[in-house]
Length: 212
Image 1 (cartoon, rainbow, N blue to C red):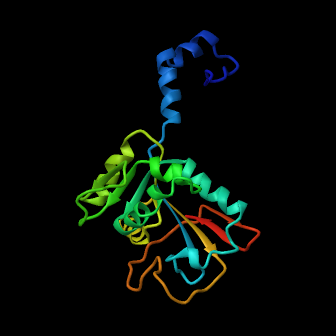
Image 2 (cartoon, rainbow, N blue to C red; image 1 turned 180 degrees about the vertical axis):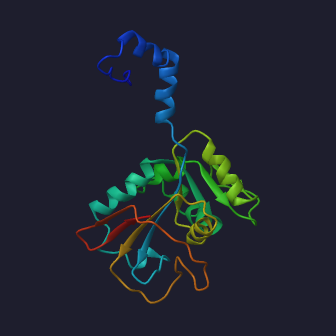
Image 3 (spheres, rainbow, N blue to C red; image 1 turned 90 degrees about the vertical axis):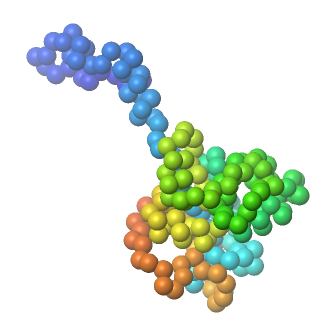
């Protein structure tokens, strides 16, 4: 609990106490300090040449305990997934049918927000379809109580969020490998988006963990 400010020499203690807000005010101050706006975050596996497609084909030998902890931290900080249509359909074809797989409990039970203009129904639940203005919808969701909203995969969606200035945090696990082909996070012709490096780590496998 917050304490009243220290009393300076020559200042009456009772007068200082009266200047401090009454108990309900103190409690409100404590609560508002602890409550933060939800964030939109994204985490991607990526090669040094910018490829994010099919990490299962180039990630072998790099996923270790350090990376598992980094991925787990992002999951623990969020309570909602944000997915593009293609990623949602890929996940819906796997996770509900493999309940014993590592991470299946989280993937199947966590609420999902799906961005799509073509889907009409969402069979893999719990899920909510987002059709309108993405920036407006996410701004509203950030005002609601809860943990972070995390984009899983969905590189096209991540690029859109970056360009629209809606993404609060981008985490990249840069693998020391070049694959030469495949979908890249940033496409030729994309607008310039300045980023600020907030944290960086180097794993024992040579993978760089970069947070912007």
